[in-house]
Length: 150
Length: 278
Image (tube, rainbow over all chains, first blue to last red; front, side, top):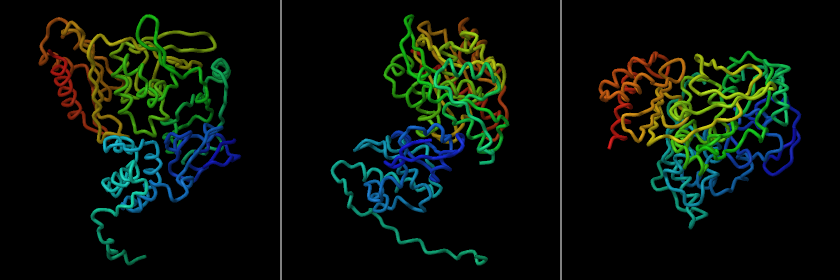
């Protein structure tokens, strides 16, 4: 089937019910501009759509920059999904809107405050670059005594 | 994924009549729309069917329109994102718009359809209590023709409906509510949690007349007809709450306990009654 991935036309030969997730090898993406869980999308239903994944943002998107600068990335597992879910928020969106937009994404570090702070910084209309450092930079956690078996 | 996805067959009709012919000729096919339920089963390897039919591209089954006699008609493939964003739904069926924004999370709402939520016949389907108190009508289609069925007659048991194997749910007709509505979804967290109890109700202009429907407390969503009749004949809220307990049959499961669900049902009924009393 044929769709547009991160701006480029792609032809994919895959069984129609193969998960879009497995076709993209990515956790979360935008299908025609709307966030979806690609583990629940058969790739046949991506036919003719525009698919955007975290790789499509190029690395210097304001959301990506703010997650770095505000400490929103934390362990990093949920970060691509959080950023893709935040993509639909309008500039200047308030905390309730941010919380609702991200409610379908779980952070197993349970550190939502830094995530909300990162998204809010990226959406601040005045400071597109969001150069403000994170308020209370905690020292990097010391590696605890690792399991010795490793 | 625990299912061998490469061995599954997908029929891809381009129009509704084509889809209905596929189902007439091969009625065992599982209809796919937003896939938010079926793919959970496929990912866990609990789906035994191997033949599917993709309804997602059928534009005829999308959209929301005003009905001549009042109320709205909603295409079965309309997503919960479309429902919550629709000014027509917000105006004509605000309780449905409220339920739509509490279902799953954004990623689910962008894909899950109203029709899917109904035909899956989960006892925890969040939109169904709202449709039940609205006395919604479902339009079913097959190559044999169309028929209408009241939502109260549609659910036969847990995950069992009156839908024939060659039929599709194509439209949901939602009459206007006779008064102020009430909707509460009680779950472990606000998003992406299956309900422990989901409760919808409406209070008519005549304050003794109410409609109450509850999910996750029986094999199907329950319309509390005996409680409604008791209220209509002048029963007070305490007596009605006691009757309501006789109309539900909650169980202990991994989400909650029967005792907790019974208590929540009483609490929500009292809250509904208080909020809609003048």
